[in-house]
Each structure stands twice: as C-alpha cells, then as structure tokens.
Amino acid sequence: MSEAGTALELRQVRKVFHQGGVELAVLNGVDLALQAGEIVALVGPSGAGKSTLLHVAGLLERPDGGALLIEGRECGELSDERRTLLRRSSLGFVYQFHHLLPEFSALENVMLPQMIAAVPRGDARARAEALLRRVGLGERLSHRPARLSGGEQQRVAIVRALANDPKILLADEPTGNLDHATADGVIATLLDIVRGGGLAALIATHNLDLARRLDRIVALEDGVLVPAA
Image (cartoon, rainbow, N blue to C red; front, side):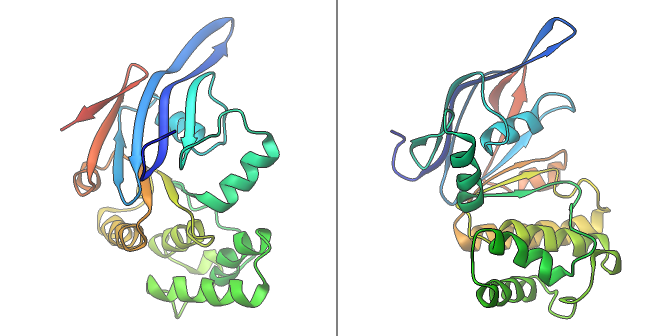
C-alpha cells in the first residue's frame, strides 16, 4: 500500500514496444510517487517516452512490468471496464492539441464528460458554466471551437479535464501549440485551478519556464526518471 497522501505511484514500471523484430524498452524501471496537491514537471528530449509514461500512468496503456497504484490501489491488472471507470472518475487529461468537438459549444464540450459519467444534465451544465466563468470564458459559453482563439480553446480543454473533479491531472505539452504570451495565460489558469483544487498533477513539457514554476522537476533519461535541476 502507498503511503498516505500519495495520489499516483509507479514502481519499477516497464513498457516495451516491438518494431520489426526489435525490442525497444521505452520505460525501463520507472519509479515515481506523486503526492496529493503536488505538481511535477516531466522533461526529456522528444522520443524519450514522456507521452508513453503519461499513457501508462493514465491507464491508457498497460505496463509490461512493475506496479501502478492510484490512491494506494494497484491498477495495472484491472479489467478494461474498471480502467475506463477509474479514468472517468479519478483522472483528467490535457493534451497539446485541445481535441474539442467542433460541432459543440464550449459549454457543451465541458458538459459531455459529466453526462457520460451519468451526471444529470442540469448539474453538468451548472458545473460547466461555473468552470468556464472561472477561467474568463463566461462570454464564450455558446461559441464553438472555431470561434475561439488558441488560448481560449486550451482553457476549455483544461476545464473539460477537470469537469468530473479528478484527483490526478496528466498533461502532455499543454502549452506546446501556443505562442509565448498565450502560453503564459494558459499556464496561470492551469496552476491556479490545480493548486486551488489540491490535485496531483504530472505535466510533460519542453517549456522550462513552466517547469520551473512547478513543485519539482523529473527527467526521463534512458527509460528511468531522475531528479532534474
């Protein structure tokens, strides 16, 4: 069992891919303990396996070895159905590209994950509206993604990830598709919401300004995590 307060823990996690008969160990014994309320930056060169690590931690891919615990519970061997339910209730995801559904408004995009989780429509709407107003999008509720700026789209994506009140947020280059000024605003939004809600967060980024604003930095090198300055 993980120690009290540990939201996410990886113990000697391995992930191997096979390409043309060659075995490629992308994760080669990753250890990580992420505490509730802690925001950690994950850095490393392109191709090092940061996205793979996030996918394993987020129950999108199964590890090939080691243990994965969410709030003290071993999750590596859960059934696909249980993994889906746990992702829906405990995990939030933010990606470099917002992946908003273009035919739906900002409000509807944030309502959808709640309705999938069987939240009543009225409650889903109220929470979605409150979240969007919190990030300064109260005048954009009915706008579809095509009518929003890049920064506005990413703010919608952030609050969509938080719609079901997850315990853990996993973000993969959340500002990688934005200019510097817009990225600063999105970072401020992200950190304000995550810290205000006491979430645990693991954020993969090449943005060193962002990384230095987080609680600590870990680097993925040769398939393992090491502390970074």
